[in-house]
Image 1: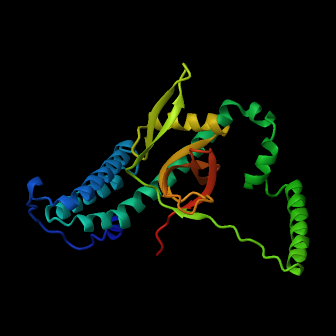
Image 2: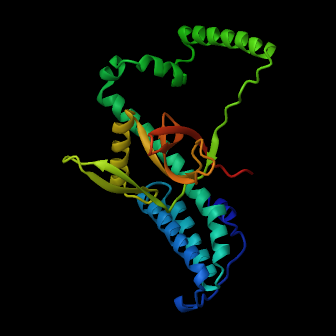
Image 3: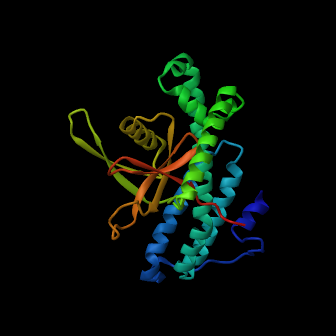
Length: 279
């Protein structure tokens, strides 16, 4: 695994015993934003390590943090802030995004298992559960009812497709937007308190577990969804008729194993896929 991490961060060669020189007075003003954002990413890596310090992955997280810290110190001491930013974009952000997705799915699975143990009878009696299970439950795919429904829908689709083709109507192709989890920026959202006032709160990848739980509870009650987890924030262009609409930082949640970006302005969910580095 250490070899894999070295390969991931391009550290297969020997580093040697190098003395890092330079002080805060020698830092160029143009490098300050890069250094500040690098420090935030370092905090995110450190939080990941402390969160799973007693797990089987602790040594791997520690190795990534220590090597990233050395690269940070090396490039900062030589005034190469732009190279430091490129390093984080190509490696650190991908590493954090990948583990965020894995952890979010794992926590979602644990939450669903906990809920199923606490109220198995209530879950079976809720209205609409059967339809939802038929759609997302692969363990029921061998049931004859599922097979019959799929066959009927497939035949309907084939007939409709022939009619569409004969009418020279183009069938739209749906696609999923690829996003990357931002690991250091926080966004503000407003919650109603018991006195009908508004409380300002922040949420981001580096938020505490308690802050994330509060945000999930807020979103769950607002959207009427259960079993969601918070994955982080992402910069996206939301669908709009306004061509000059700027990009926005929005929260990303996982629900039933799939990621969605959430527009806090109108409570809309947009399905997406999380960025994966191509080999």
